[in-house]
Amino acid sequence: MGCVPGLRQPHRRRPDDARLTALVVAAHQAATVAGVTALSERLGFRASDRVVILSGDLLGSCHAANIGVYEAMRMGMVTSSSLMVPCPWARHAAAAYRGESVGVHLTLNSELDEYRWGPITHAPSLWDGDGGFPRTLADLWDHADLDEVRREVRSQLERAVLWGFDVTHLTSHLGSLELRPEFFDIYLDLACEFQLPIRLPNSDAERLVGFPLRQLAADEGVLFPDRQRAVRHSGKRAIERVIETLEPGVTEIVVEPAADTPELRALDPQWSARVEQLEFVTRDSSLRAALERVAVKLVDFRVLRDAQRRDQNWVRSRND
Image (cartoon, rainbow, N blue to C red):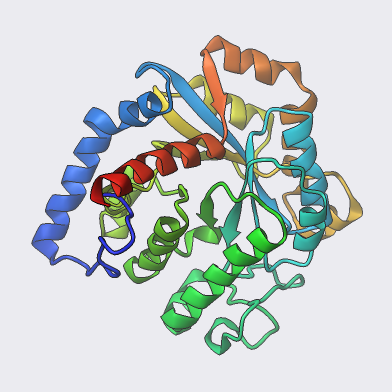
């Protein structure tokens, strides 16, 4: 049953070890046998089609990212992005928004030493004592109060809506909400309440985190791409390799395009890869050729969101 108000349990307890193992195996088998085709067909494509969401991450993180991501969406091939609401340049991203497919990159970490951001709510457990969110996932997971986490991520989503974004999906910065069951519970609850698709780790990574997060999301009617391919700290050739090895189904390819500015060079030691990514997804005709060679169908997260809401509204109507 999908995310229907009043018809779902507010909290999913972690299963015992035997049941957990069985669920993870079942989730992996389902993804292998049926899951890769089911989503593409629900979106109106054939089971054999290669459907791609090309995502430009880190919108709002800095001015160079805002320029790069919007340029990649408006002039290039990037179809979706997600906003880091607590970051200093998030308001600039909001002012420049023109209706693109933008989600919220729920942020609970501030990993850079010299460029910091912190909670937008009163959340003492989410400060690291040095002017921002915890730098590491371990620090976050060890010290965060879950009620404060829930308020914070909800406020980030609500602020994006207040700023005028037609929010299309949710992602989590550094995977903070995906990789621990008590944090994932908050992530999934938010996706259910706002009827939004989410980004999840691949099925092989699911076995490493130790709980069946993909199956839990599927059970709630929350949509997510069949697989994710993140291209970070690498340029054109890495993106081409991902495209060349695409499997049937829906794949999210994640890049981090940014404009070449003194700000970017000061913030990111891998700045040159991000500039190369921007050039490739915006002005290099070989990207379009690479996509055409494997007959890629480009979509955005809004397509997933609309399909999820259509299905969930049907379930709701059946139970009214």
